[in-house]
Image (cartoon, rainbow, N blue to C red; front, side):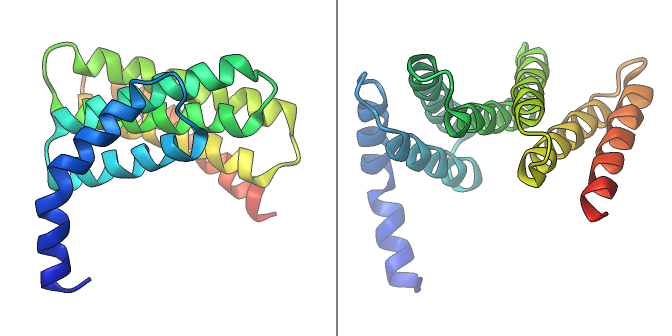
Length: 171
C-alpha cells in the first residue's frame, strides 16, 4: 500500500470502525464478519487506541460465543472463541488499567481451557496442539511480565509445558 492509499485508509478508519461496531451489535453477525472485526481490532490496537481495540474485540467475542452456543459441536467456532479470548487478554494486558490484569488472566485461562478441550477431542491434530502451546506461551509471558510472588515459577511451568508440546510436534 502506497502513501496515498494508506492516508485514505486512515481517513476512512473511524467511519469503518463505527460501522463495524454497529454491525457487531446486531444478533445476525456471521463468523466471517466477526473474524473481520478481529482483524480490525488488531489494526486498531496497533494504529489506533487500545480502548477501541478492546471494544471491538469484546463485541467479536460476544458474537463468537453466541454463535458457538447455537452450535456447540463446532470446533471452528470454539477455536474462534479462543482466538478472541486471547486477543482481548492481550489488549487488556497492554492497556494496564485497574482490573485489566485480572481480566486478562481470566481470558487467557479460558482460552487455554477451550483449546485443551479441542485437543482432547482431536488428540492427533497438530493444529490443536499448536494452539494449546500458544496459549501456554501467552500465559507464561503474562505471568513473567506481571511479576507477582510465584509468577516466575508459574511462568516457567507454562513455558515447560509449551516446549514439551512443541517438541512433540516435531517428532
